[in-house]
Each structure stands twice: as C-alpha cells, then as structure tokens.
Image (cartoon, rainbow, N blue to C red; front, side, top):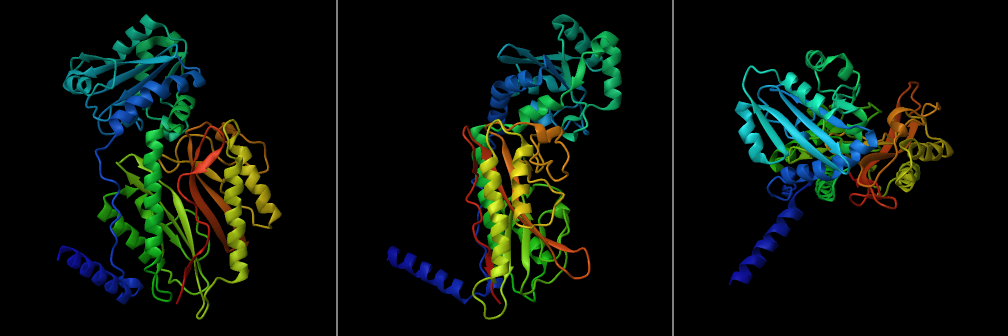
Length: 444
C-alpha cells in the first residue's frame, strides 16, 4: 500500500509538471546545504596557516588592527573583532614560521573575546584607559621594524580612521611612526588565498547560483517577461533560500536583454525574439562567501529550434575566450598575462575592445583582494594588482568576451561575457563548477 501511494504521488507530480506553462512551473527548493556556520574554525585555520606566509611575503614583522563599535574595520570579521564595543587593539606578531596574537580589549568585551579562543592572549583594560598607550608600550618592548596598519588606497585594507591614526602616532612617537606602513600587500596576500574548506563552500554556492539562473530562464515568456521580472524572481528565490546579495542589492542580479549597460540594475525592457539575455548574479552564503556567475540565453524566432549561425558564432568566440583565459591561469604568472591572452583572442576575432578586465578575485567580496586579471586593454605597461602573481588557492571570477556594434547609428554595443569561477591549483586552474557550454535557448 505504501509503495502504491508513493507511485501515485510521483505520477501526480509528473502530470502537474507537464500541465504547467513556463510561468507556472512549480518552485523547486534548492537550499544551500544546511549546517552550522564553519567560519570560526576556518578563521582560526587562516590565522594559523595562511597569515604567517602572507606576512613573510609582505615583509611585515607586526600587523596592528584597531577595532571599534559601529563603524568597524572592514577586516573585523577576519581577525576576530566583529563584536568590538570600545576601541580595541589586535596585534599579530610574526615569529619565524608562526604568528602569535595579542589583544588589548576593554573589560566589557575581554571575557567573551577570550572565550572564543581565536587569539593567543587577551589583556583586559579598564574603561577610560588609553589603548594606544598600551600599544606603544608593547611596540617598545618587541621593537618591530615594519608595522602594518590598515591605512590604504584599497578600501578593504583602509579601516584605520584619520583620528585613530593621529592618536596612534602621538602615542608611539615620531621614531616608531616611521616604521608604519600600509597593510595593503599583507591583506592582499592573505585574503586572496582560500583554504580547501572555503573552496568547497564556494563550489557549492556557485552550483546553486548557476542553477537559480537556469531556473529563472524557465519562466521567460518572450513578448511578456521583462528583464526586471527575472531579477524579481531571483530575489524571491534568494529570500526563500536564506542567501544574501553578493554585491549592491539594487544591481544584483543585473539582467539585460538589450544594449550594454555595464554594472547596472535590471530595467523594464520586454524580452523579445532575437535577444541575447545576460544575467549577472551572485549570492552570499553563511554571511561570508560570495559568488559571481553569468549565464546567457538566446530567444528564438517563431518556428526556430536552434539559434542562427551568427549568434552561435558570437557565443563560441566568447566561450573560447573563457577557455583561453583559464589555460593561461597558472601559479607564478601575472594577472596581466591572463588578460593579455584573451585580448589577443578578441583582436584575432574582431571583437570590439572593452574597458573591462578579464577577471577579478572573488570570495569574501565580489571584487575581492588579489591579482587583477587585467591591464592589457590600455596598451600601456601593466601596474598595480595586474602585476601580482597567481598562487594556488586563489579564486577568481573571469569572463570570455565578444563584443560587437549594433549598427543603429549610435554607439550601442552588445557584449557576451561568459563569466565563470575558477580556483588556481598547483599545476593550473580549474572551474569551480562545470562552465556553460551552449547558449540557453528560449522558444516562443
């Protein structure tokens, strides 16, 4: 009897699915694998295993992070001071192959901070005491030669306020102040590399991201559905699944079936036959790790069963560009060289030039710290993060490009940007999830 009941349920579900049109397809639940947030353990591993190497690469003896309530340092979560009340100082000392940590914490938070067990030593001080004087005494004791502080042109490593820097320099004096340097290199080296556990989380999150995009295309009805309808559908699914936006909510997802609009919001343009639809979408899981993936669809004309040859040709050039970029991504190469490999392919296939780089680090933010897969578009010598070399464990979102003029007496263009996510391995790079191989076809 039980088996007959199960068979009837399966049969009824199948009949219901066949009877629905695209706009009525039943919602398929795809929850991110439920589990306790593993961040505490992963953060401890990152501090113990990855921070020493990052400090060595950056040539830093000590890293000082000042945390505070409300407008906290962007790296608070990464160093364990996300719950700071009064001003606290987090100090990380490089000792050979090991990093030890010391925290000067206001007494109201010191006990709970110590209980978390992230740091080697937590020293409590009374309200009203000057934490910068405590820091100064410690610096005199250990006499570090290079002290990294979060003061940088890069937002991620620019958490120290102007007032705090003035307080710090006043406390430590002019001689010690000359040893202060930006933590930009240190932070970039540290954050850009992910642990195997993090990569596995991002891999599962990427699979969910791509699946939701495919799911959204199922509800498209040409001549009726708007770009904004796809965006609203994905927002609805995000709420149902309990995931967050990977970047500015107003621009995630960016759905565009019209002319190029760059980083933007989805408009009320109605999707028509002959349109390429671009969906640029990312989610944040566990409140920490993010994805950035694009999927492309093509809307067929009435009676067509496959895309026209010119549409397929454009798609194939962009798809091949992604594969060329992936093949160029290896430990020891620069981000510039990856971008150059794809630029040469674009020129060879008469693509319009683009201002966008081939790719960017992704992980804690959609545009994370690390090597920039760019710099070749300008034709000038590479500089900055484009000259950083790739290391195993770094994760990227990157595009295969093809762009063409729409020829409508304007400067309008259309670009296919096959954006996938990849991780650098010991010998090369691999996609986090299977890449999009063919255009998604939408029929009337």
